[in-house]
Amino acid sequence: MKLNQFEKKLVQHPIRFWIQNHIEAPLLTSMMPKPMANIEQALEIGCGFGNGIQLIRHHFGADSITAVDLDPDMVQAAKVRWKTENANKGLYFSVADATRLPFENAHFDAVFNFAVFHHVPDWQQAIREVVRILKPDGYFVVEDLYRAAICNPISRRLFEHPQQNRFNHGEFLAELREAGMLIICERNILGLGGMILAQKTLRLGGASY
Ligand SMILES: C[S@@+](CC[C@H](N)C(=O)[O-])C[C@H]1O[C@@H](n2cnc3c(N)ncnc32)[C@H](O)[C@@H]1O
Image (cartoon, protein in one colour):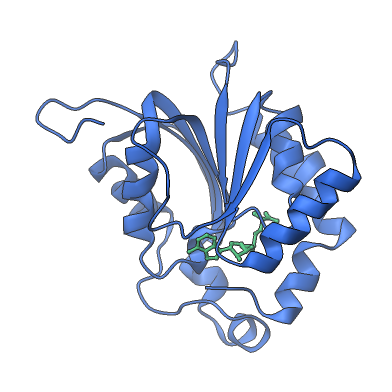
């Protein structure tokens, strides 16, 4: 689901960028095993205005980053931003839905979801897509908002989020495990949101991509 105008303004506000760069990124990287595995191919789902690209590049050291978003305006804005900064080498953009990712199986070393899956009506299918396109042992880095944060009168008034089939921390973890991911590290933030590092495992008898 695309963002409404208010949320578009909010996610591109310099304060949001500052929080992502100075608080969220260090917390997320602290969850990664050390030394951090080399990430050759990274995918960011729901790239918005493209700030996540900076995090993935500078904090996670990815060589090549593919950034997708459901909203063509977002993809265009991110593209222009990085071209203007003359730093678009190794960046690839495309319009795509998290539930139908146009990539082959086992292609990425890491997939990033920065506050996106709470916008996706069928988030369980989006998780299955992440597992499909990850290489074995690949990482899924998640920072997202839960039911309590978006299914309340204040949030409903300000934003547009799907209200059915939302999830909490435990439900998101359970779905990841069900899809064949190993939870390496997780943080539940007051029941409102969370950070998760999961790794694709090859289960005997399970789907293998
Ligand atoms: C809250 S914004 C977060 C943007 C960016 N990741 C950030 O942290 O600033 C959510 C983004 O997810 C995108 N989005 C929503 N549903 C999507 C879907 N099904 N597939 C891909 N992107 C989606 C929206 O267009 C929006 O850019």
